[in-house]
Picture 1 (cartoon, rainbow, N blue to C red):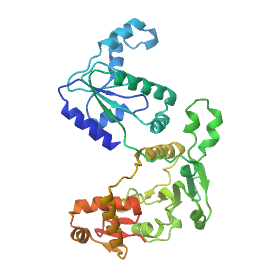
Picture 2: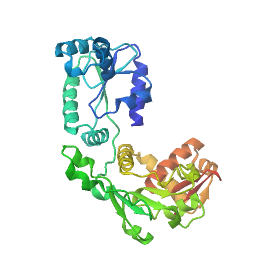
Picture 3: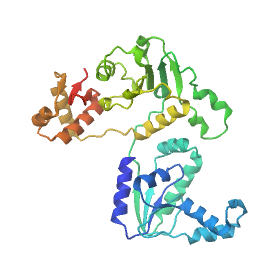
Picture 4: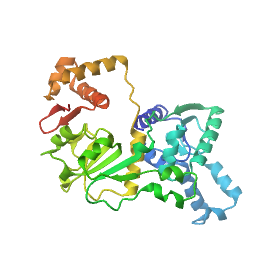
Length: 348
């Protein structure tokens, strides 16, 4: 949601002398949003502080409703200090974060709150915002590609370890919550015994031990196996060499190096949700698509190429070359970059 952070930041900078309310339903991670923006207060925290100030550390259920209402009504927004809230408060500007129900369901699952409650509150807030007399700016998170079909949730393992991973779907019967049904549909853990078996498999993640890959270095792994692994969104190569983790070399690849203690169900689940929420629909103009096609045709007969050659051929600066190569990789998935040799390499 980086694009949305940028929009909110711009609106806050433009309206520093106004009382700004950032409004959204439960399930939206306001704490992370506040940290990224480095500004603002959270309504729930302000209310908690008021309750403690007036009543000490007493359970809210023992505080009279009329007193809680009085304290709630006393909360005002300061100019230049936006307030993040799940409820309407008098303000000069409302930034309303409206989340598509499909994305909201994933947010609620990740934050472990009720989807039905979140959806009901969002609809209520939307109605209130439509009747607001102050200025309103609607913030709609960028459209995403949400592949939640079963085949897209498979996790395959090709290793002689990691036998302790469980399959979330078998835990479903032990829970009774309207949101748990979705919550425990990932991961579907599956195992393969031979490399050739992977040619017929597809899914979200492949976990494979480094010893099964015949390549002398990280770049060769990317060149040799990226097309082989193209049916998986992510490939985690287990390595004992900690220096291989988070290698910058494979930035344009779906292949990552991790240590063998990285995996458990909760980590895999969080990885899956984050992937869904950050995988955006690719939309390019016809003009850009045409240029990307020309660049791809130019690269077909190359094994490696320097940025300067691309810049001179297509009349663009080096920063623009990097952006276009990144976009080309999203479509054709055939670009890598070797930061040791400072050159692009092409995957056939």
